[in-house]
Amino acid sequence: MRVRRLEAKDKPEWVTLFKGYIAFYKATLTEEVIEMAWQRLMEAPADFHVAFVAVDKDDKALGLAHVLFHRSTWSPTWYCYLEDLFVDPTRRKKGAGRALIEATYREADARGATRTYWATQEFNYTARALYDQVATKSPFVQYRR
Amino acid sequence: MRVRRLEAKDKPEWVTLFKGYIAFYKATLTEEVIEMAWQRLMEAPADFHVAFVAVDKDDKALGLAHVLFHRSTWSPTWYCYLEDLFVDPTRRKKGAGRALIEATYREADARGATRTYWATQEFNYTARALYDQVATKSPFVQYRR
Amino acid sequence: MRVRRLEAKDKPEWVTLFKGYIAFYKATLTEEVIEMAWQRLMEAPADFHVAFVAVDKDDKALGLAHVLFHRSTWSPTWYCYLEDLFVDPTRRKKGAGRALIEATYREADARGATRTYWATQEFNYTARALYDQVATKSPFVQYRR
Amino acid sequence: MRVRRLEAKDKPEWVTLFKGYIAFYKATLTEEVIEMAWQRLMEAPADFHVAFVAVDKDDKALGLAHVLFHRSTWSPTWYCYLEDLFVDPTRRKKGAGRALIEATYREADARGATRTYWATQEFNYTARALYDQVATKSPFVQYRR
Image 1: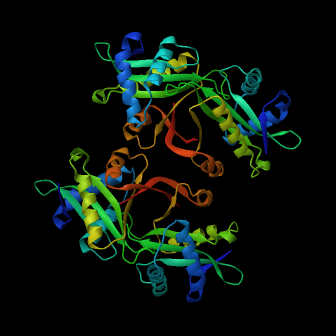
Image 2: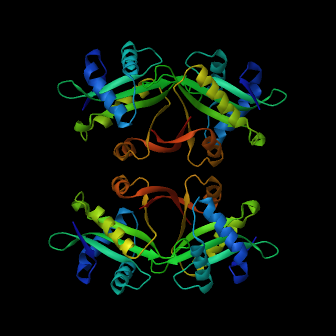
Image 3: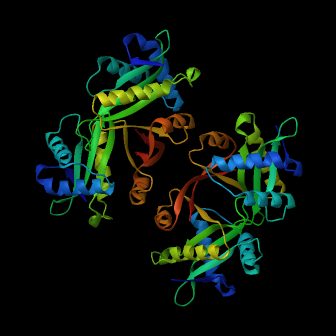
């Protein structure tokens, strides 16, 4: 499973994947917010996410990862937050999710990040079966206003 | 309980509080990392945390909050992440923690953040008793490399 | 804190405590079910619970524990299930809860039970702060029809 | 998927299934305890479990359920505790687990049980994906001495 940086030509597949990801969470984002995320990913300001895609043999994206490097009071360098991870449901079980996490780890190492982390719903059993293999569940739970 | 922005004169109390907070997690940070966090809080670059302190009647800090505003692919504006929250254990039960969270909410509103969140250990019962009153536990759990 | 077996003279305090316990769970039981539980505790058939009370210096009950010994396919003897545990909210922090658990442990040992266990709500922070000191949280969660 | 009561002729398959179940929990039981469970299931005293098996077209057991009806201080009748549930790992995804739970529900209804429940490990994702369909996760966690 090949993973590479997101490129401008990926827009159609990226939009489909990102919308599928949002729908998975039974959430909605306006077209404007989705377009803004895309523009920011393309402009790549220092305070926005790095995006990876897992691609098939035709170099078409079938999975995405959005990774934010942010400051922490606990780190001289960065924390690496994997905010979004999604694989086309029809193309799972072939290692795309794992390859995207591994690409995230490599990027975190290249930037000297002192922590890499993400959050997932307690009942997202399919994802957690993978996460348990490549990471450790912390005892942290999330509160939101 | 009064809350205000962290100021240069707060350094002694801030160092004591931050070290108490780190010790609570049975973690360690080098003096260099703690000093770097302090310097960054004072220099206040756009990508670093906003710091609040709860103060007593002598304007001495007895609690701290470090709040990071970061980009999200889900937001046109910001997400507000309350990374650190700590109150001197000898001066609890007087509303300092709640006042620091409320100051965080006000700052989030002032900046138009579309989400405010934090993480806490599942077994941090004292903190969770407060959090349950001012926020909602999400079903998200945290994974770490 | 003294703990002894429930006796017939305890009925007024027992009713108050058991109703307080049920109300804590925002549940309701009919008077008939409460009376039936009392009768069974007094008649003490082999398949019903053993009841302990924590008592004050006037021998008045201020806390209760109902303990069921039941068969398990995993045990040649018994499992010990602490079904109900409650202390008068106005008389806590004096060791009654702990003393009731310790009485349960002694009874379990006397009967050769190979496991002693109970369930509590994830967000019952007050109780869990005690339970973490005298027992171990298992990774088991409970499903109900 | 057909489910019926455990019968004497099922012993070879039952032993294999029960041992597989115990091994799943990385636990061990002596041969004596396993034999004792079998004997009790066959003798069927009132205080022991009811056993069901899911069977294939040759009437061979490929899954088991051990169900304990016990008294509760909250019930005029019984609580129904599904203590053990296991399906041969090579014969899953065909409805045996669900059929065993449904047989448990029917038995609970026949006996007028006022609650049916069981416990599972938080990270048993495969089982929980089924349980989420046929039951409700309660907020109860389990403590053990």
